[in-house]
Length: 296
Image 1 (cartoon, rainbow, N blue to C red):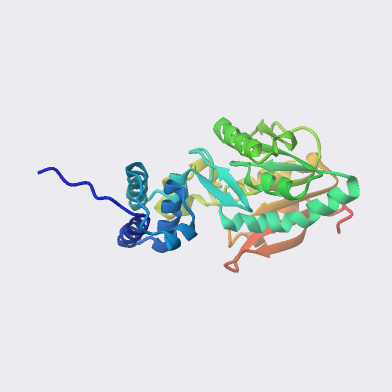
Image 2 (cartoon, rainbow, N blue to C red):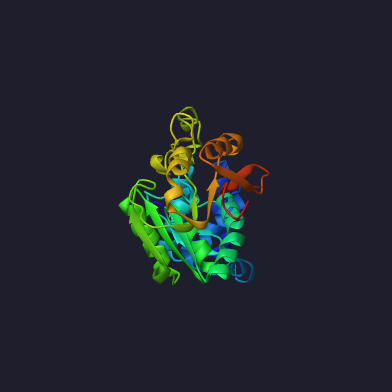
């Protein structure tokens, strides 16, 4: 006898998604179930409360259940959706881009006041986002500071194409350009702030990453070399010739790298202006200025 296809309502699909995700032992099955169901059915949270008996089309049910199976195999939920919210922006992702995460919003919040200050003082602010990926950091800053422009660099052409799509979606394309470059290698000109969330996972720690990260984020966006500090050395040694007279450097770091990164930049003549911790209380972002600048 062929199996009878089960018909789902909005309420029963939400319940089934929550049950399956609980069995898969994800951290927050209720939240993930709601995100998946709302995305693939085109509904909002209020709909499951006010009309839980509404029938759901078979195609939407199949998409939700397929995403759950992918999740059980370690696929991050936002990879299934193809986008992630970051600093109020809905950003598309691709296999060559790191998934934007809330921790990186700490870097944006550290840099934003100085970007605003520079824009007010100079009438504009030039931003260089190294390793831009989805464009998350640069686009977040551009979305708040209208008198700013940004160049996003990356070693991946696919990542740059994704960043350009995101800039166009949010109406920021006129102020955002992309550049294929290995860190500062192909960069010309000077910028008021150089900002980056570089790869900072050490070789020893790469194998200990959760499978959601290890199997689905691009290795090139994670691997920071033998000690996880190689990109910081690259940036520190090459940034001088690309900073304006008020230029600053803002960086995301691993939770245990603050002292090491500070030493790298101090050796190149930079002073740590400020640092910020993420919502978990871990060291996450650092702001540097050349020792001879007016910021000191």
